[in-house]
Length: 186
Image (cartoon, rainbow, N blue to C red; front, side):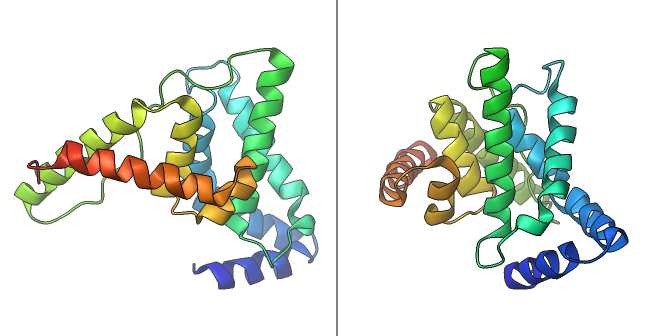
């Protein structure tokens, strides 16, 4: 679903009666559930005993706050802001480590019909994910939002309360480092 259409869809459906809001929530669950789980894992390990509870609390919070969504903003950024704040509150209340030590396996590599390309693509993705794991935990969060979720720097800045120019410079530096690491590989 394209972004403008999705924002309109969310805005209109969230103002309807409960049945329509439940249909909308089902759409959000299927479209974003897996991605939200992975983003949570950037902050709280999958193996944490409360991981599933945190995920379900976040999904309920999204459902309860659907009428508050402003369609002038990015829906994806709005969702990730809720996820991030909930996770940080959870960690603060439990006085636990701020970030997961190591992110679990990332999103799957898109398939291809050419086996050689599939192997090379898988190896390149493994190197890229290895590079991302070497980043500082806060930087891994930025990398996830930029590379996996394709959010704009302005949206990431809103989510993380950071200057978009600073984020752009960090990502540019990472891309140069990553290009150097992948040189000669592909």
